[in-house]
Image (tube, rainbow, N blue to C red):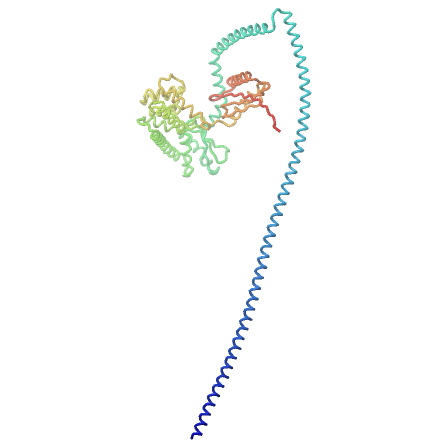
Length: 522
């Protein structure tokens, strides 16, 4: 039993030892395997790290190359720009050099010509000095001879001669002045009539054409036949109803209406427009349309007059005067509408009267009515100022207004301060540039005549008619005309214009004498 026990113990111990040995061996093998695995992992990590390092290295090298190429291109661009700027600068320098060389050559030529001129002038001056010396010697000899012949010295002779010339000039001037005044008194009225008649002859035809003719435009020439009618019945009916001469000629798409009365012309024009638009043109229809048109024009005239009076703030005006004011719309003077002219004069009169401390309403009233005599219902031999004054008195206007109307063209004596105000404002309205129309040919001819009169005098270099013919500027040669002669020339030209020409207003003559001394600083 004990033997088996010992054997069991020995076996147990042996098993334990063997188990320990086996466990140790197993542990050793697991450690070895884990070490190998760790070694393999370390190798893998190193390998991947080396691969990644190579990739990073390649990227950095690529980036460095790109940066280098970029910097290289920028550097090349900079160098190209610098080269371009250098070429431009070189080109400009060459251009400047060529320009400077050209200027130098021109200056050399100019200097040469100046030197030549200076030398020629020096020679001429020498000759002039010699001649002046000779003249002075001859003058002295002549003076000595004269002093020997007479017992007087040269200064005494001069004084006596000047005194005698003064007395003779005074006597002749007085006689001439007296004769001129007497002749002027005798011939002034006759000359004035001649001037008026010649003016009428020159501008009468043009004014008649401008103020007495209206043109009625038509769409086609077929309408002309309808207006004439069978055997001329329609046109005769129109002329009889309106009192207007109707001229149908070869003028394309136009019919001419001729009459001294602008209201009649307007009635005829509107009637023809209605007839042509309607299409029914026969004598009975013509009489009907003309009657309606006359009523329409009359009502329009009254409305225009009322509106004008209201706009100007004028009250209590007689209905006949209001109608007369409305008729001004169809009347013109020198191409200026009479109603517009009267409104301008009224406004100007109101402003002037207010500045002078007078009643502006009375001034406006006088300014509006000052030309009512130009639109008479019947012909009159009186001037328009006196005719307008009679109408104003007839329809109950105050004495101040009537006197201003009658005296604005100096037809009667001015008795109130309103009269010169109306006269001045009338002149202002008519004299402003563009207010009144003149025929272009006569206007150009008048400017040319003004300049030709100036060129007719000696010493005149240039002449310019300016300010619509209201001023003449004359340039004279300073060597031929001195200051005293310039004043005499201005007076002579103004007298020549006054005697030889007809013109509205005044003509200012300005003579300009100029001397210039020019030198060049080098």
